[in-house]
Length: 324
Image (cartoon, rainbow, N blue to C red; front, top):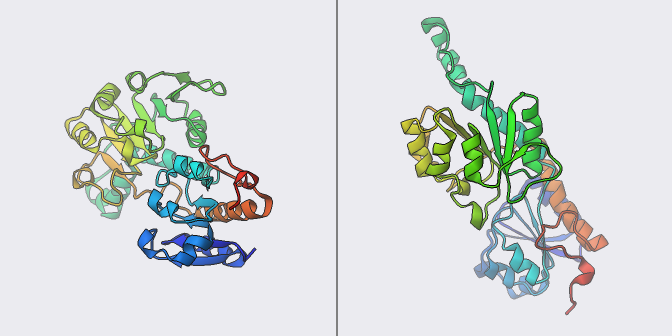
């Protein structure tokens, strides 16, 4: 398959590169910048393997581009609708990281309500022996009502785990699902009013921008807990800081932030905020599975004429693409 030229702009998981080298003619550039393009690349590149964003200008530079294989479930850094209009299929890496992200979410929730990181720090500092038992935590998972903001594949995996904790589960999505029995609310406001724990697992879209705002946080109440493992884009971080400082809600656990890797110092300084550096899928096993799916999409496209996991905006087959 070496006749197919694949471009890797910037860094990507090493296993992606290892497998690409064995299957394709691979070209690397330091970043996805039209300035780095050559006439040869513009003519010859048929596929791109990317971990990050691609501008429409960059995508437009390629005359023979057929497929963009994205490393990650989220693909908001690629204008998939524009790609589809150009007969370019975009793929992502769903399913293979669902369980890992769901596990991390439960861990983050437990750490947030039971303060396990603080308890470990207390022990390591020698305070158990010197000062006595770690203080009783004011929050518990017992008796909580959990609202899922988003109930896609990962959201459902999280909810399945929550069932084992005997908590009440409800959800809000743009329309109700027929395959679950959880209570549905037709607005985020109604969901937040009904629950005391909100787990956000929605993608970055125009309609999710800062939807978790001061009003939503106030509706959770003073016993409220926010967990965000979706996109930092969803949360108004200034409103969250204020809510945590003033007791509008009790605590928050965040794995994602608005301007990563920058985390506002105001959040870092809050004792009732549990913060992770976007590690929900960050195990070697899961990232390797993601890497394999990136390459398998490319191989399947060129060998069999269809991608394994095309995004909804680009349900294309290779036979549908006009030839020059």
